[in-house]
Length: 147
Image (cartoon, rainbow, N blue to C red):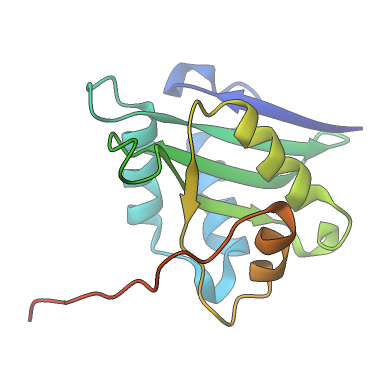
């Protein structure tokens, strides 16, 4: 049975350790992922009690097997930048193409009280899923990296 569980803080981890959650994201984000250190920082931000921070994580299981994970962060910048940033979402490759990713993303929206943004690389196959869900490409992101 497919189940999605929302986690608001470190103490709510029951059936999965933080390490297993981070390992899952690191492994299943493939070439579109970040180092484990960055995923951990994202979780710290999501679980922070600071006024300008916060968020949550979602754990998706199918017959008690971890098949998906998501981290959503509050931006603290509502009205001029979307209120929420979908930072990480990953689905086990053997469960892709079966609607699990869509269910996880749509469940995350139920826990957000404002607009949601995400960053996706142009060659990421998940981009089509995000577009079908309703994400649009409003801006091209440009970065200046200090050397």
